[in-house]
Image 1 (tube, rainbow, N blue to C red):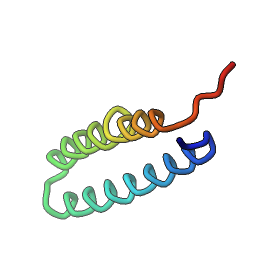
Image 2: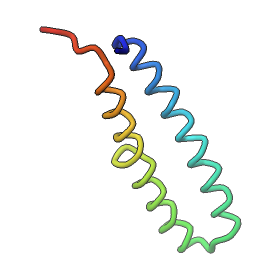
Image 3: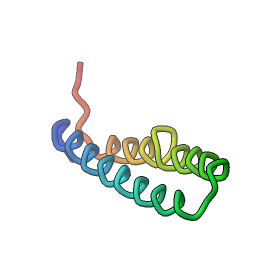
Image 4: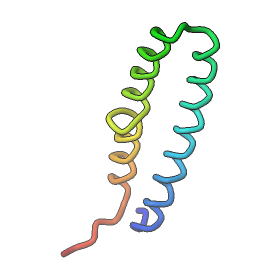
Length: 71
């Protein structure tokens, strides 16, 4: 089990890597797509990698392995 602090640090590390990956993908797409197609593609990337996608999934997985503080 991860402590709350370990889980938070792991989540931030994973989130930072997601952002690096998204930035790299978007930079390549910007070179290959016209502005209209790029904006559409960017929304897809954010939806899949961002807060409603992989970022949330990663957080949920980490939460499964984190000690729950009893209130």
